[in-house]
Length: 168
Image 1 (cartoon, helix red, strand yellow):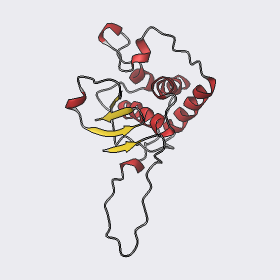
Image 2 (cartoon, rainbow, N blue to C red):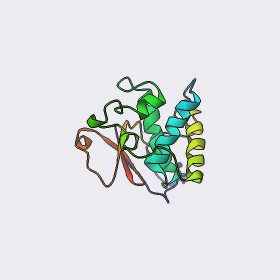
Image 3 (cartoon, helix red, strand yellow):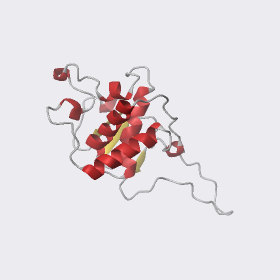
């Protein structure tokens, strides 16, 4: 399991000296996320909202990780096949809970921090274009450190990045 904090750079392979034994390092941090074809402006907005409301104020790695979970879900057969479908899943009946709590918490979904919103929109475009790796090792779920969801023990934790744990 990888652990990233705001000061932890995205891992890069360390050069090996001739006298050092070769060490096998995990390479999942370098696993690219393939571009997602035919994404509408609304789809990019939904991904930007997820980044903004779930990871605003976190490091670039933390924001990338949240976006990666949304993109991983779009490609998984057990989730909706669109960005907005994934982000809004469960909102049809908020009494049963939403996949992303901010979507059905009754508060405004209009971003109020302009710089963070611009950053979230840019990252959403870049993630959809496949310009960043999946730092979560294929995670489909995540939660904030401050909560303990009932499902966390049934899944494999793949990463800890900033204030979130990631699972598949």
